[in-house]
Image: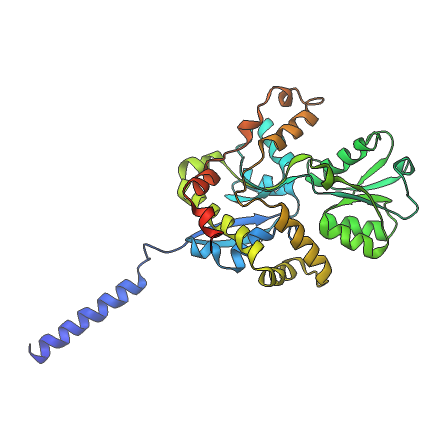
Length: 334
C-alpha cells in the first residue's frame, strides 16, 4: 500500500471514529422523569436509592428524580403527563380513578397504615382531644386519611369532635405542634422519634393495628404500560433492586437518607431505616385489600366507590414478572 493510499485509509478511519462517537448509542439510557413525594427519612427512600446507587442507570434509565410535595400532587403530575412514573398515595389514586383519571398502581412499598397520633403533653387520653385543633395534610393524602381513621378508632367524629386544620407535610405539622398552633397530628416513624424527643407523647400507634392500606406506591398511566411496557419493566427492576440494596446496605443507605431528608440525627435515621426494612416486601405488589379499605371509606360519600372493584386500581404484572422470572429471588441469594 502506497503512502497516498495509507493516508486515505487513515482519513476514512478517523472519519468513521468521529461518526461513531457522534452517533447515538443503541444502548443509550432512556431519559425519564420520576418523582418522590416525601422528604421524611425512608418514606421515599427506594427512589433515592435507585438514583444514588445508580440502579436506574444499571437498568437503562437516565432518571431525573424530582421532589413533588404530597401524594395528591404526585398523582396530579402523572395525570398531567409531566411524570411518566412516580410516587403517590392510595387515596389520591383512588379519587383520581373514580373521576376517570388514567393512573394505576404498579407497586406498593408500605402496605399498612404506618402512622402514629402524637399530641401535646396535656392530652393524656382520647377524650382530651375533644374541641382541640389537629394538624392535617391536604384532603386525599395518606396523612389526612390516617388522621381521620385514628380519630374514628378512638370513638371521635373527625367532623364534629375536633377542629382539623390544614397545615401541610410532616415537617410543617411537627413545627405547628411545637409552636402550639395545633394540639395533635399524625406522623410516620421518623416523626414519632422526633416527637418523643421534643416531649410530645404518642397517643395511638396505628401501625400495630395493621390496617391494609396503600401508604406509598409507584404509579403510572395505563397508556404507558400499554405503549412502553419495557420502560416500566426497567423502572421496576431498578426499584425492586433498590428495595434489596436498602435492606442489605445499611450504612450506604443511611447516607442517602441523610442527603435527601437533611436529617442528621442518627437515631431518627436508624429507626426509620429499621421500620421500612422490616415492613417493605421484597416483591412490592400494590395491595388490592388496601384499595378496598379506601373504597369502603369513600362509599358513604361517593356512590362510584361503592360500585368499584379494588382490582381495577392495580396492575400486578410487572412485579409478578420479576418474581416469576427469579429476578427477586436471585437478588437475595447474593
